[in-house]
Amino acid sequence: MPRLVRWDPPTVPFRAEHVPVDREYLRRAADRGEIVRLIRGVYVGASGVATTAVDHHLQRALAYQMHFPTPIVASHETAAAALGLPLLRSGVLPDQPRFILDPGHGSHRHRRPRIRVVPLPAHQCQTVAEGPFEGLRVTTPERTALDLAAELPLPEGLMALDFVARRRALCHVDPMALRGEVADEVTRDAMSALLAVDRGLGRRGARRRRIALALTDPRHESPAESASVGHMFLAGFPMPEVQVRFPTCRGERFLDFYWPEWRVGGECDGALKYRGGDSAEGQRAADSRRVEEKRRAMELEREHGLMIVPWLGYEALYRPTVFLSSLANALRLRGAQW
Image 1 (cartoon, one colour):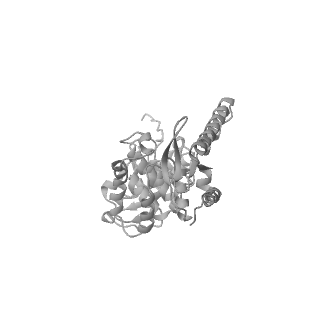
Image 2: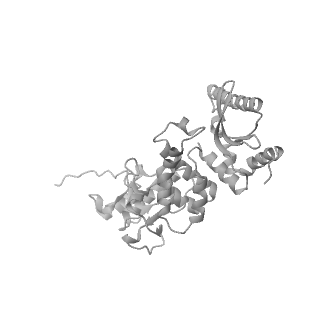
Image 3: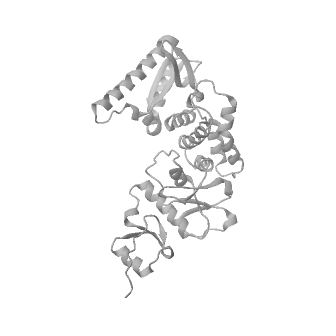
């Protein structure tokens, strides 16, 4: 009598031909809830089903790559989610994963998933090496950021470009080296890979990319700072200097943004650092940070005659008219006209 062997469904996506059971067994397993069909012909064990919207999106992307015979590469928002690039609404991705297919590998005539057939050199692709999405082919961070900048509103595209430029710079210098006076070679190196990829891209979205690249700066320390710059540019503001050093009685201080002609500074503060959580200790730490920020602004105003305009990262990302109005009032009060 043959010995029965228990089959445990894989917790990563698999095709029917990759497992030692027939399709009828898979159908019954799906009926019992032991496996879940991601797309036609690709399944995952019930315990491996993604539990967040982003993970579900990436799991489907991997399933599509397993299903299609052509080497489609995850791109745009899908690649950004896999690579950790900042997105304005990181928890809300397109219904369908996005892909690029190099024309040298064929064409695409299916309605789903969303695949653009455009040139994609091999050196602009990489593969997720570990984790639940191991094996997922994605565009490189540089190509991903440029593809996003070609389509998204400027503040969002700039978030991705700044992130890539800053990460490259931090491979070679300490974060403090990106404050105050920054060596030209540091900036050039941070931008070199982005500019090299951009030169090989087509005309589609070229104007958006060009504007975003002109504003890209590895000194922008957060997505909110990047979005702030994008909104300032779109609103026609005079563009500020960034991460400017000021000596004070308590040591060096740095301003996120500075307009020297009018002696106005801007500070974009992440809302998270002001939230203390539920514990008394956490709230005390948040209060301490808030007091320190206020003390720093008072020192700069008192010792250097500056007018400091603070705003929260949330405002920069989702309610830009709030901080733009405050900033415009301060600049005009100091004589700025535009």
